[in-house]
Length: 166
Image (cartoon, rainbow, N blue to C red; front, side):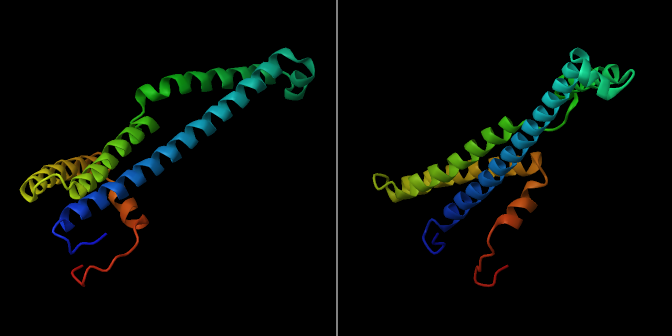
């Protein structure tokens, strides 16, 4: 990325969009893995409940009343997993995927505008001004929605020298 071009500011915004989109995608992956692990755990619990209820040798392992406790725990886990999303403040993985895709689109659009040789300089500047304003607004929305994201983006970004201006 060359910040000495006339479009350096737009390129920096495009770079920010890319970095934030990557962090949103990483968050989606982490959340999806967590969901899959929980589903696996609940499936295992359900299998244990079925085995403890219907297989006498497994029921004997749990002892007197043990199979009922396993069934009760499985039923409670099923209810919690069904009702949890209704009361949860956590965003589902798909939401991070959608935001990542949308924010990343500004990265592409800005670079397309910079490289569009059919546009006059004035048209290109107008297009970039609008695109960067939209990108900034959407980046601000992401930062306000998920206050933790800026720290993660900064932690994952390589340190760059910008001429000693901070």
